[in-house]
Length: 118
Image (cartoon, rainbow, N blue to C red; front, top):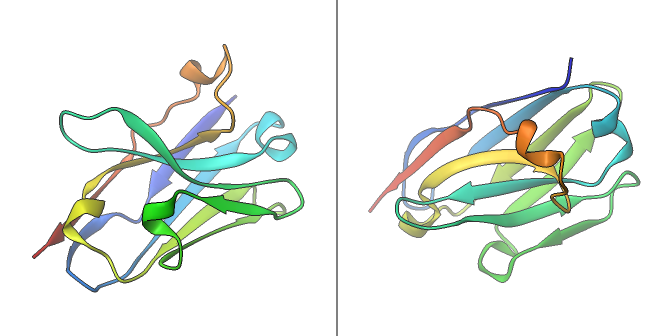
């Protein structure tokens, strides 16, 4: 069964930290670059960080220096360590393959809500 399950979100104050987890079921996720996406109310879902099979990472400018993405291949799990959180980081966070292809729409999980208070 192909499935992504996100967890770890919550409510924090500005400057706080959270660690998100994405438990993946299915061989495809072991073979592909994985990423964390986020969607704020009224906005599109955007990629914020990605990690390749061999651990190379990339970040959108707004989170560089604050977020760290990693993956544990043995556990088929992807993590997002979020530090120095800002109110503009408030969103629902999802994981999925990168880039999104024709099959990716079927992989979206329920996401995990991150709320940062000022």
